[in-house]
Image (cartoon, rainbow, N blue to C red):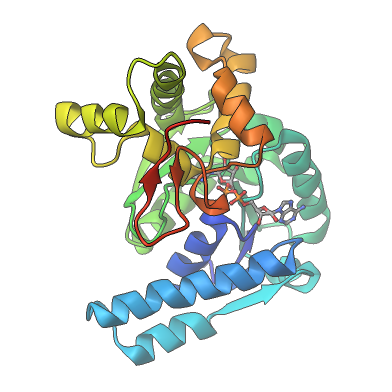
Length: 293
Ligand SMILES: NC(=O)c1ccc[n+]([C@@H]2O[C@H](COP(=O)([O-])OP(=O)(O)OC[C@H]3O[C@@H](n4cnc5c(N)ncnc54)[C@H](O)[C@@H]3O)[C@@H](O)[C@H]2O)c1
């Protein structure tokens, strides 16, 4: 029976994952190296819950109980010891993730499940940093986590079938649909999505159309709810770049080679919605499509 959940990394994904588990009565600890990120995550969760109360999706008492179910800390050593499941959601950096899995292997009890929310790094590579690869699995959530109903579940070479079943059941308990994917970089979602986002950026850079034009074509012409440039901003341009780099290195296909414009924007710190500027400017109430980069 899983009860105590630790989420590592309080960025775009970590706050949503913590929110969803607390909403389903799990005891959650959210940890990050940055106290500021933890504060931002706490405020984001409170704001999202307040919106739910306003829309009468939950009561004030329920929102308060969810908030009270999450502990925030920069030192999760005690939480690691009691954890039944740890979900790693730090930046998409293989060396960093391996370092964290090594640390978890030392700190967590023997039967604790170690999951990664990685978008592109093969699970067996993270599992190799531990002495318990049979208890390492991929749990790939989608952004925004409280809203998106999918979890890709990735079984590494050594992941025990029992662990896969536990995570499949858990995914149902938190109200999501799980899809099992093989442990090949990018799994299903990002292997298919990222070339499209990369191509949209190249299309913009070659002046085929502007930001509004490209996003409108894909929304009205293809029925996508969000244009690819807006979606890239929402995911985070740094996250898109990291995923493309992993996919390009591991799959070697030219369409994963990150577009120069993407690299330029990330180098300038224009990371999309989370930094206030990417293909759109988010300073005002309504986002504004930018004309030059
Ligand atoms: N953004 C998306 O739409 C999305 C969707 C699915 C999966 N993912 C994956 O989820 C993971 C997190 O992505 P994100 O968008 O939330 O990134 P983010 O940049 O918003 O947040 C990453 C967080 O990790 C923290 N961090 C860095 N090093 C740490 C450490 N040693 N210990 C604890 N915390 C640390 C950072 O302070 C930051 O708060 C990545 O692997 C990414 O590929 C992202």
